[in-house]
Length: 63
Image 1 (tube, rainbow, N blue to C red):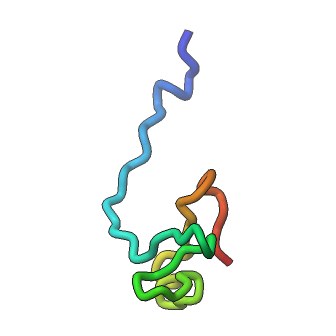
Image 2 (image 1 turned 120 degrees about the horizontal axis):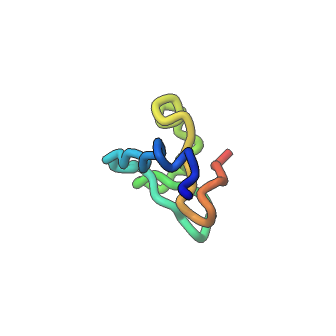
């Protein structure tokens, strides 16, 4: 028997977005290409809402 929800579940859409930041394991923060901390870029935060870390479980956010 298949659970009811599986009849309607769909895979999440993959968004093709080029991240302007990368994870720096030494700092344990997302940094911009010029080395600045991504969470300190107010324009980026206004556009994206947050910078999600790509490390670990992907549930942590830069402050």
